[in-house]
Length: 287
Ligand code: FVH
Image 1 (cartoon, helix red, strand yellow):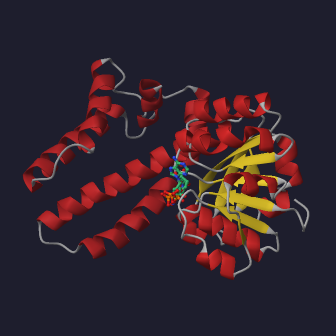
Image 2 (spheres, helix red, strand yellow; image 1 turned 180 degrees about the horizontal axis):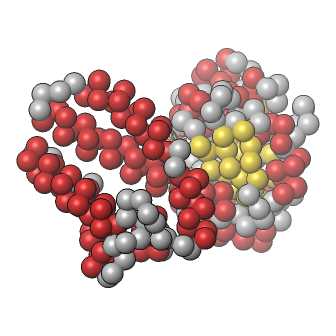
């Protein structure tokens, strides 16, 4: 996106406002639109232009960025203006499933729209700052043409022509994030049951999670090799640990919703004769 490329942001929720503000800061003429009025005051004050209708919003710019609630809201917003979108570049940063992203790419192709999908790996306050990254897939030409503007939002990375890839990676990373946070909350409930400080525990848990995450690349190498033999903590060893964690959680009065599925995964593999193999074999059980 050259310095003066015009951008329209459709959707002014917390994330849409953050993205629009980053485009304005980056010097791009930025038009904004939201289904419900009253969310653009700060953006207009900082130099964005309010579109009074969705048609005007789409006509205002070469690049249209959608940041809406979900797949259904993208169609609800774009279907009526498919004709006006023809010949423009559409970058959809709404969270959708990979299949939904592919469906949107087909819909866009049918209407002569160049489509790039994206998955935002940041919360609104991180946009434009260190640690923010956005994953893209779909039209390479839209990505290349707009690279500089996309870097205003966070590190921009392109995954390939399959429009579903960005959200596949997005949700794969989020799956790990949600289970990590829920695991932490389980641990916090355990220490709280003994009257211990959850705040102090959270510092300890952060350091522990950081140390443990260092072994993830090794997991990747083991999984790609398909060789799960190990001389370290094998699944039978992990079973004993999970059994003890379950007993300790029960004793602490903490619900087992989080750890029971992990225990089940391990129990099943041990029962099936894989007890001597590495924990990474759980990958085979899941896929
Ligand atoms: N906020 C975050 O931390 C996450 C980070 C990772 C990526 N997500 C995704 O970004 C999309 C937008 O998220 P958001 O935080 O801006 O969400 P809200 O503040 O709830 O705003 C939702 C906007 O969507 C509009 N909207 C909803 N339904 C419709 C519809 N049927 N037609 C048109 N627009 C619709 C809503 O408009 P309004 O309610 O104000 O009229 C907001 O503009 C999302 O996919 C996250 O998963 C953010």
